[in-house]
Amino acid sequence: MKREARMIIDKDYVIGEVDDKLYGSFIEHLGRAVYTGIYQPDHPTADEDGFRRDVIELVKELRVPIVRYPGGNFVSNYFWEDGVGPRESRKPRLDLAWTTLEPNLFGLNEFVTWAKKVGTEVMMAVNLGTRGVADACNLLEYCNIDADSYYSNMRKSHGFEKPHNIKYWCLGNEMDGPWQVGAKTAAEYGRLAQETAKAMKMIDPSVKLVSCGSSFMYMPTFPEWEAVTLEHTYDYVDYISMHQYYGNRDNDTADYLAMSMDMEQFIKSVIATCDYVKAKKRSKKTMMLSFDEWNVWYHSNEADDKIKERKPWSIAPPLLEDIYNFEDALLVGLMLITLIKHSDRVKMACLAQLVNVIAPIMTDEKGGAWRQTIFYPFLHASAYGRGMALHPILHATRHDTSKHEDVSDVDAVAVYNPENEEVTIFAVNRSLDGDVSFETELRGFSDYQVLEYIVMEGYDLKAVNSAEGENVRPAAKTDYLFDNGTFTANMKKCSWNVIRFGRNK
Image (cartoon, rainbow, N blue to C red; front, side):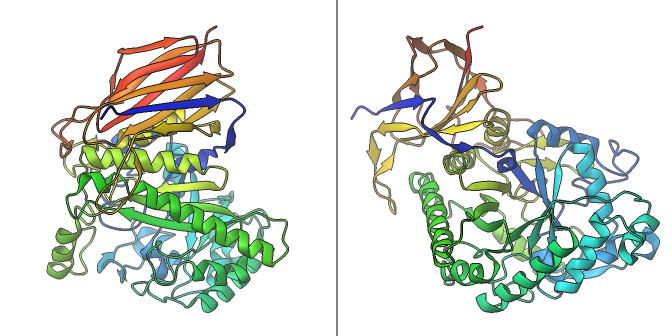
């Protein structure tokens, strides 16, 4: 069977503006994300604050606009006060989420300082597991208020005269998860989040708040959790969160690469639930989505269990250190395409996580930092996926997998950047059976030319990168035709494709 895909892109077929925060990430006090990840004072590249310069440069390369901190599951037993002030007076704590010891050598102020160095905003999370309204207010006062008040003066005494002015705040994390310290029912969380949000906006009306959604789409609480909690929080918060991870546990690549369809259904279901609450409340407000945890996560599960059993209460053990292969990069590309397709409602997202822990960047404690396979699709989307998302009219041959039916051989989306006068197509040929004859007609861009065609193709699906070298990396491709506004190319099977057009000046 001849495999083919034909797509039409029109300047007037606008989905919505892609918020830069769609390309956010996440640092949790988990494994080696902080210690020997972003912070390692004894490393040869460490700067005056103990931050690894090699990691800073790779984070800057990704152009990450916002980073969520400090968790994750960690935040549900987080005492922020232990991580500020002189290091010699800070208290080590048991981290109940990951069975480790948190030395609190790195805390809130260090993270804010690091974020400024890499050019990113902070998305802060408050503990609604073991703590509540008062502690959230105290933390907000410490971070954002310039007054002669207790916590504002505490920040000043720690060497930060000016407020941090953190705008985005998560109201807890995965509060319906039985693994969560201080897990809640929907009604319990809804009331607590409502009162926390109300009080925080009394202190700083400019903050943007994220209410917890279900921990993931297969939770028995989903989507009733969203409906019940939003009944309480709808008028006080600005986003509801979504979390989802995927893995190829059955070594079924064809079905694995179809899992982005599940992600799309998850987004549509949350949007429908939000809009149901909007209708029920007769509200004019539209709730936006924060997909603040997403990635591939499964490679390290067995090793993690052994570490936690063998070495409980150790500092920064190597947890969740998935080493990603080429097929993982393809799925990450498909997930990015899905997020862009729904950028009218998904206004923030965080690749979880950024360094060492299920991350695009890995470090060697005694060596350098290096890029995983998933680094590159995220890099391309962050660099070229800013502007207006365009609805693709796509017709492609299809296939079935073991658990998914009617899977399009090619999934794609386009982004138009009017400021740069550029159009970028992101596309994945997820067919394992053959190349696809790919054709795209650009409408409304008659004076455009091809700037470059970037591909990741032809690799063994299980190929990985390492500190010794990058076996999987993008390359330029010149084997295409562009005539009278129509682009034609042979899209290789199992490939990531970035096609950039610019106005002919």
